[in-house]
Image 1 (cartoon, one colour):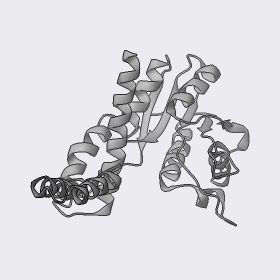
Image 2 (image 1 turned 180 degrees about the vertical axis):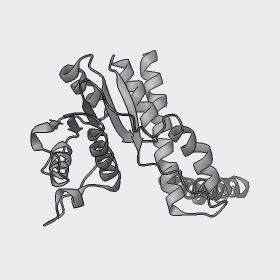
Image 3 (image 1 turned 120 degrees about the horizontal axis):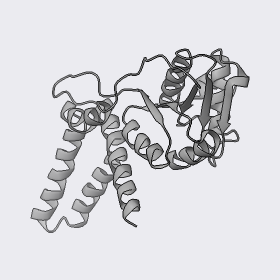
Length: 233
């Protein structure tokens, strides 16, 4: 993660302060990294290559219709509705999933995600409740409440659908890695990316949004490296 890594570089610079040349080098690296990851150049370099792999999908769905929305996060907010409890990423994915439902006939919505250790309700259940609040019939929703990551989501879907094709909804930065995982399981996914974060181009203006976008992209590149290493083992 960029911020902890930058802070680590600064901490190391203090620890080796007597070695002035090395300390200056670490401080310079930290500030250059912060500058790059907070700039539009980072978005253009790291984010947009991921988001450009699969275009927005508005194709009508024919035949058996399943829409799989990958999980993200939610919070237990006292008195809040399910929609209000979803993270920004989760809400973007769910709304796109509901849009995809309307592109087919009698589609079923598949939501997933476990609750973790800090919440009493699974993410799949929260997503299902939010979908119901947004008008989806509860009988059209399938839940995978035990799936902890994309690999497990693919495993649960494989045991449920088998070789049936489906529409896969997730964040645009995450879509290339997700498609690789689902293809490795022999599943036939049709990509429907959403939650695009590399849109605006403000030149060299630094922003926290760019830093967050860079962090998400780095997360994906590390995830793809981890998948590659697993195939070697």
